[in-house]
Amino acid sequence: MTRQGWSTRRIALALYPFGAGAAAVNVFFASLIFSWLGAPVASTAWSLGLGCGIGAPATWYFARHIRHLMDIAEGKEAS
Image 1 (cartoon, rainbow, N blue to C red):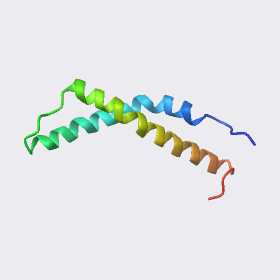
Image 2: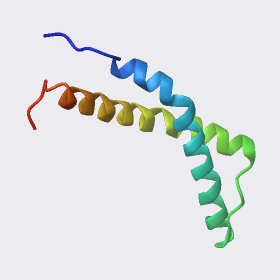
Image 3: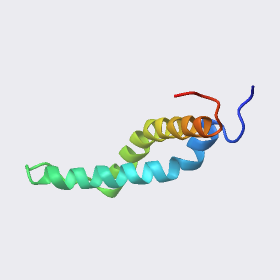
Image 4: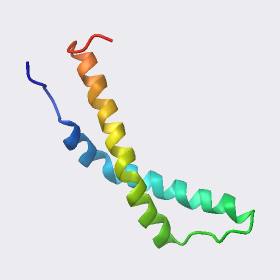
């Protein structure tokens, strides 16, 4: 039996800009919180760079979860 719909890789590629953007915002806000303890606030470039790095595995795992839910909805996996 073959899978219907998008593959995990295709879902991840479609969602990556959103995952990287969300991770970048979270990195920036975390740096604001840590600035209360005396740490420097992250620049836009650092926030985007770290967001792109953190966003890749986060988006991949989210895409796997979405693909799993699609399989359940199609009745291909009992759980």
